[in-house]
Length: 118
Image (cartoon, rainbow, N blue to C red; front, side, top):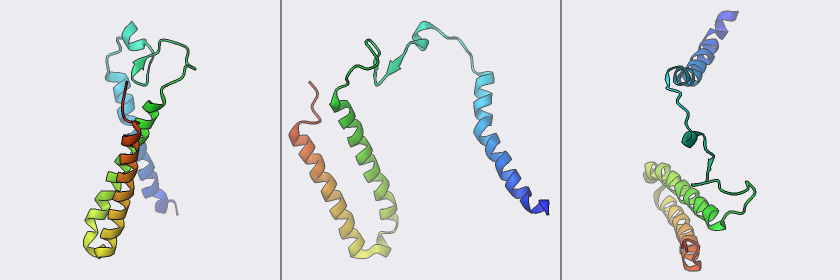
């Protein structure tokens, strides 16, 4: 009866070895030489120089959201390109509409000055 569960046990063991093994090897073999520069707090692209509750510029988050948006657009384009022949003209039109909506949003944000830094 338990022989049926042996492949599942092996799957779990191999998964743990692949997931935890490199972490343990890195912890055991990596040099540990902390210095003040490595231990200093670092957040959001600049050093922490004030209270942790200080206000950030909204444009930082806006650029991050734009990056995610266009990164996801590219993630949708790859599978679409693979099955384009099966989708035909309808699939092509839907993707053109998708890209057009994203382009209009990008142009709108560009015209509003959301991407300009002072």
